[in-house]
Length: 316
Image 1 (cartoon, rainbow, N blue to C red):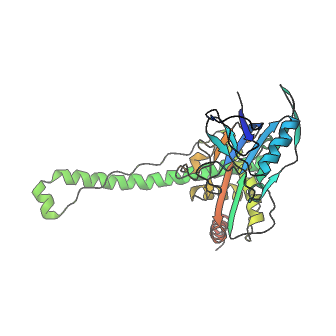
Image 2: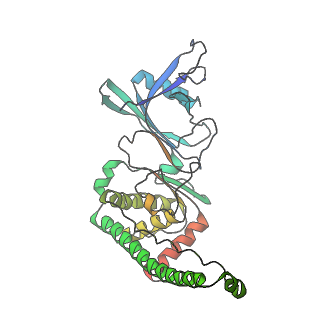
Image 3: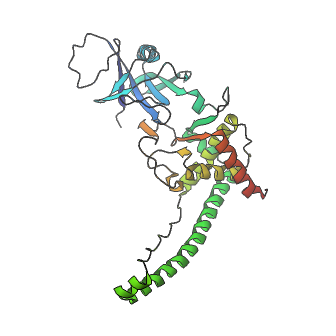
């Protein structure tokens, strides 16, 4: 598939295919591999401010492009796309990687918000922000215990759905009987008895179905998220595989975790994220799995961990 080209001009203007100004300024180019945008963390109406940016170019292209990127110049792409790396944010420029492409040798560069992606952080804040972006090769590190924990958590949740279906089915029978009684009466009888229109039947929830790849991702993402949570919170996070997958499930269902559209774990969410808060991936996956971000206040996280630990370990 063709990759997207990022373009920065030396006068700071955004170069696009619609630009009609004289092109006396120089343009510095790089190839976009992957970019992740999280509007809830960094938002701007005119341009996208990614929390993660992966790009490559030749040796000379890389030096000039990165120098301009560090200065806060906006990189244009396609007809109207704009990417900005803010100087005021704690971006980290990872060590470069030298790679061989079909066109020849190239330099690959990753720029990311360290406070979100690094496992360890310098300080703990009252609001926890993090993002996990596991490389695809880490799927090979998922242990049998972690995989079994995810499968067990999935089975447990589906059993809870079965129990909920029994309650809903009983309620629907009551509503069906009320509806039958309602229509057995005349309008005058309903008015005299002050019988209102019966409630509609409740919808039965569906089982959550995840394939083996999604189960493995759940196990891996739980590990990646919880190890970062543990470094960012004053509350201890139990290092138990089953507890980790249940904690991630709770974060998803209560709206503290954010996914991309059509994410492997979308079925675990109670509602789809809005476009203003959802993660967006630009470019290709380029060896990464789907990102998963978490934003939660310290006190809310502490309550959630205590609640889950009480149910999991049988403690009050």
